[in-house]
Amino acid sequence: MLPLSTRPSRRALTVPALTAALCLVLGACGADDDKSSDSGSGTAKSGGAFPVSIKSALGTAEITEQPERVVTLGQGSAETAIALGHTPVGVEEYEWGSDKTGYLPWVHEAVKKKGDDLPEQFTGGEELDIEAITELEPDVILAPWSGVTEKQYDILKDIAPTVAYPDKAWSTNWDQQIKIIAKALGQPKDGAKLISKIEKQFAAAAKTRPDYEKYTFSYIYNTGPGTLGVFRSEEQRSEMVSSLGLKTDPVVDTFKETDGTDSALIGLENGNKLNKSDLIFTFYSDEKSRKQIEGQKLYKAIPAIDKGAVVAGRDNPFVTASSMINPLTVPWSIERYLPMIDDAIAKAEK
Image 1 (cartoon, rainbow, N blue to C red):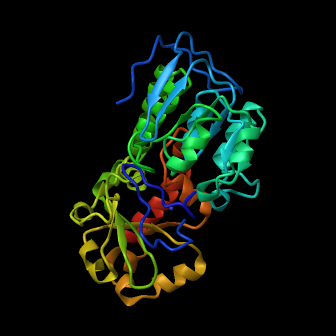
Image 2: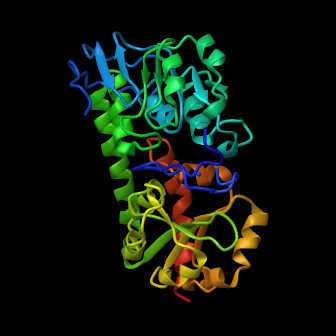
């Protein structure tokens, strides 16, 4: 797993040198079952959806029958599986974004609410614990938004049908991820419902804040003193904000993308180009880094930052949740985001 995820949405966002601390065409299905399971563990009914064949950039997963033991890799897959009624038996750990329970809080809350056992956690990324995954005896391994390598995939596929990314690592759209997982679990119609539900949640939140559409924003990041990067409008954390009604500052999509990502390293000397952004969204690896970055004259000269019209999550779980769009993170993030945005807008108006 990438350190302190700055996870991508549309395409890979492994931003070069993001500092160690800045950790941040499917085949047709068979018959669909329209019954969704949003509670309980194990298996949601899938009717005649199997067998299912899912192509990925690394190979084809042939799922012959309803999976009961699900293992997830990367980010977002566990949340979607849970929302579809399948609590995974194992998930890739993400210590930086977890709370005192040792789990991502929205995952912990959802699983405990169902009354299910919490998934086993195992080491992911380059040090993927293959032995731990084998011991979990999975029926399917879901990794459509992950960094699974070809070498890892060749081992995993011999343990259980493994669903990797359709194009490049960390390159799957949030809605595409839901569709892939729903298909793998025999619930394509339920997957479509989850996508619609997320869109409605965003729309409902935006409706409570009609004034948001008056304001523009840029979502920025840094890789150390003197650096400045911006996330483009299609990147998941930017899309999360714009889905709440704010307008992406058009300038962010004029910058040349960095290494085929949904971001652009523009340099702190170009911070003045963000002078039309009413609000700035960002995050910091820790308080020491925060003070160091905020102490730079060119950084403080960005109008929104000078006014204090900044939305910056102070806890790692929120930074993680607001960086990805899935059935569990969206309501969890919206609840926390709105007061933060309201406060930043009040400062922008001074």
